[in-house]
Length: 316
Image (cartoon, rainbow, N blue to C red):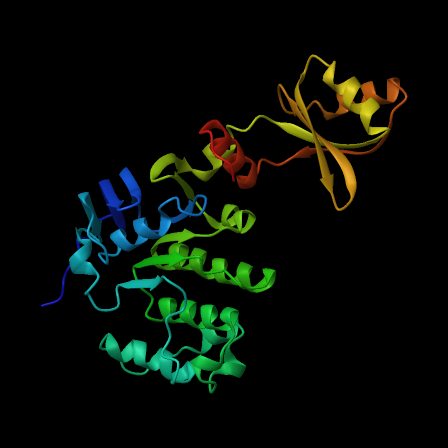
């Protein structure tokens, strides 16, 4: 008989998971959950332990301490359960001698499924012209798209995707993450996805997990974590040094950072509360500073990432 996870079980659950290699600890007592119907974004610098965490979550690696459960049963057991988990780890890992179409068909057959219509996925991921090409002749980006189509093909209840948008152009990266979001929203899949494309991840993730040196630095709702960033406005003014001096003296200003974007110098101005752009604009004009642009700045995952690592004494 196949495994029958409880209907209300969380997608993925890690409890006090630790793993050490000869060079040091990869994970240090990490606990997290990926509920059904939720996209959890996993971020961290290189070497933070993200891939190790994913391999343990899939039952492909045994933790030194703690436990991993998928759909209510041991991760080691569910990893062998046919078709309920879609994954993309360690690159595309396709059969190089088979065509794109045959790689997808083989995946279905391995999980006891007959013909599965891959047409919609091929269309969304721009793969239809490649169905007859052998996987060994694909570019890196093409192979990643095929691997993502394979992970989604059987409409799994759990998706674990390590850098699924690596080597993709911005439009295809957006489409790939949209597919992850749709899996959660329309089928109730539990999705754990890592990516260095933080702006795209911010767009689709419901929750955020940030790892650094095997430790969990952040774990929470994306919107709530972003709300911890102080409100700010972006100012482009001339002369910039005069603008900076004026703003630094304002009582509502908490800090001024100089930015250079596409060759243009701008100021990121942290303020005590939202809605103070008009007052800053008036103060600059009164001081004879020409303001080219001033607008509220939306909190970003990039900024949250940078601040969290800085507080932990780490570089990006």
